[in-house]
Image 1 (tube, one colour):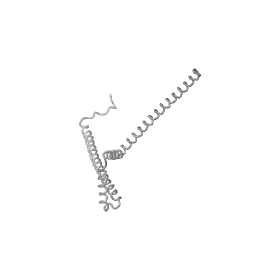
Image 2 (cartoon, rainbow, N blue to C red; image 1 turned 90 degrees about the vertical axis):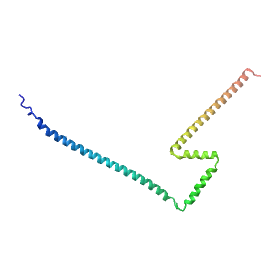
Image 3 (cartoon, one colour; image 1 turned 135 degrees about the vertical axis):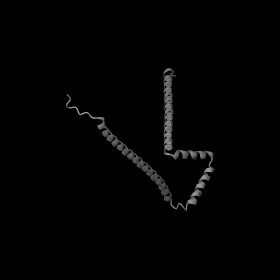
Image 4 (cartoon, one colour; image 1 turned 30 degrees about the vertical axis):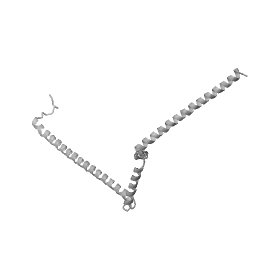
Length: 163
């Protein structure tokens, strides 16, 4: 009847095949887990290296800044004297001068605060210009109305009261 049908496979012949597939899969999973572990270790070491290089960069920048100032050691006492003088001078300022100085320092301290202050100044100037324009325009309208009224009154006087 069924000549082309494969011969029946027994459960005993499937067990070795399935066992070998399971073992190969287990070995592949183990290999992949080891690779992942190795990559995580590499990533951690690279992050540590980046952090170390960043800290070294900061130290080098500080060292360069220190070395760029000429005769830093010999000027140390003079500079500290200037610093003390500036502190004493600031203490002698009046209240409104201290307030102005601190506001100026706050405005100039960061790029963001400078940008905000500049924007504020632009808006304020634009508002002042608009108010002045409106005031000037209103005054010219009033002046034109007065001139027209005076002209009509003069014409009326000439036409109706010709004496």
